[in-house]
Length: 301
Image 1: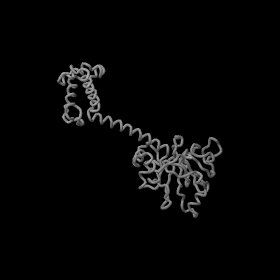
Image 2: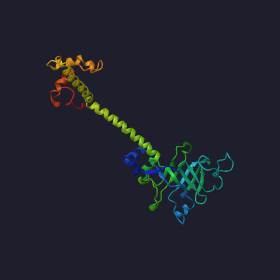
Image 3: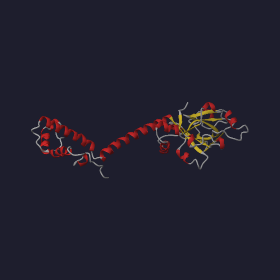
Image 4: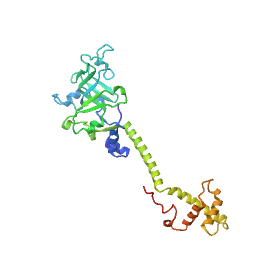
């Protein structure tokens, strides 16, 4: 069993973003993109015969497997009987083998097996891929100039990170699963990575936008709340202390200041001068206000 996968187009719809956003994060290494070679139970010796009865055409999922010659990368049947001996046995039996969610089928009749570097590296030719194989962005980016692509196991296990598959898509109608955009798949776990990333960036952008608006208008919002409190205080003293407010904005402001403890905490009350200006502005249309308020403009950058 392997994870569900989604075409890039469908994933973009699920995430509410553009397809190029997914491609960009793939290029950055934030997420992984895979090619899906299908389930294990579809890959048998008969798969070779289905490709071509005359054996002139390789199966669409044929590849070369390269990996260290150890039992971390190949089944025990590949090696001689001695527990400490990693040398190949004479003729390994056919088998399926997995690297986490990636797999290949070795067939003793159709596949070719060899060793390099003093038997430290095993190469299996004409193996059949199945499961999910990771496609690096660099391989995708050179799809126009190459017909051979390096794929890696789709796994979080660092113990198998030295395995790789050289995959060459077929020609014409047999060019199945070539590393083209229509064949790219993103797994469910990588969709969740993208979802968290997009959510985090949206929240940061929203926060920065609100901060920017506040700065751009020089604190209009804060001033509006302060002005509202001053006007409420003006009505309060006019109602309760009509004889104290006098006939000028200055005397009205002084009365407000006198009773300011009822409206502001210690040290937070505006000055008498600013209170008088707010009262004066309140008798004019906004475009003629003298201090920050209705005619406030964004700060010049």
